[in-house]
Image 1 (cartoon, rainbow, N blue to C red):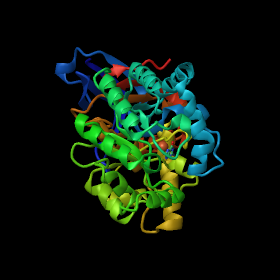
Image 2 (cartoon, helix red, strand yellow; image 1 turned 90 degrees about the vertical axis):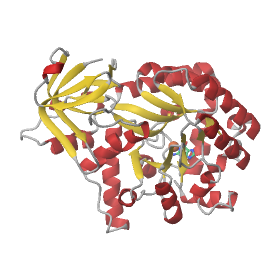
Image 3 (cartoon, rainbow, N blue to C red; image 1 turned 45 degrees about the vertical axis):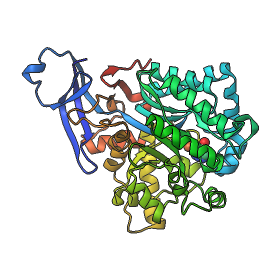
Image 4 (cartoon, protein in one colour; image 1 turned 135 degrees about the horizontal axis):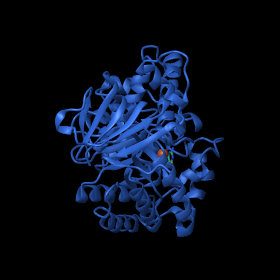
Length: 425
Ligand code: GUN
Ligand code: FE
């Protein structure tokens, strides 16, 4: 898999450093980035060149938090806050995935949408149903996108249709599912997924922590999204000194060997914020969901300043758009409101910072992904922004600003994941 993309190349080398080259050559060698060059180096002269002159070539984007079964009702049911929304819309929809035919058609629609988007890597929640979750993994694997998929665990505070009959039954089913999926796919892997503390008993958390250690898998869940939810967790787990502590007690909050993503962290502060940082937990910032469900605005500038790892999530269907370009603009816009209304010392995110969060920021969860640094896995998206006509010449930053603010997936021309071209039809 050696080839060259020609075009206007743009990536973040670090949080502060944008690398750009007009009419440059981005070289893929053995599915890895060899580098960005002004001229094709002699040793690559035989590599085929795909000429995308005039297009922007950016790294593949990373969605650190999305619910596949919720894609079916995106844009609906946005009149409630989290706990009522789960009861009224989410749980009834997720209950349908016990039917494999329903799962087959709904997950086909989701996997197709993921394939056609600018996303090349994603961390996905399924439901607790093993056959449907495996079907989703089959489809995502075939899409070519790199994904972690979680069979969701719940054994309390949810309808009978979604509640495992006991903690032990949930742990056993998760163990069987892990064994049958962990080496099955090229692009898809299992991730330990307690839904959130209110839906998981201590016994279930304990068992999931043991599975994490047994298989060395990553972890994903929700944290400090909504004030009512947080008060509930305080009642359910009086032993923990924070919501984060309620995961950490069971070894489900980062640290050595347990890479972890926590979605939202809208109200994280103090000792919880310290634990996020000390344990290297990734925050999946999901600004659109936080607005739709009236959850609040996450203090992303503060997290970045503290050195906490942050990426972006669509959180479909709390968020209605699957696009990480859209998540970037939502992140900028909500950071402006946070600065104006809440914390005058926390300046808004720039376009470049939001671009970083949606590419290299989230990409770091997957290893060397989300940038065109030499040795990174070759994930690239070709965007034909000439479809957004301009009567003025634009800088790279201006072109990025437009594709982010307009978030129009129809101008995606090509996508590559780990050096393989994805079929966008
Ligand atoms: N907390 C627990 N489950 C969910 C979910 O499905 N979506 C969101 N946004 N938050 C949750
Ligand atoms: Fe979520």
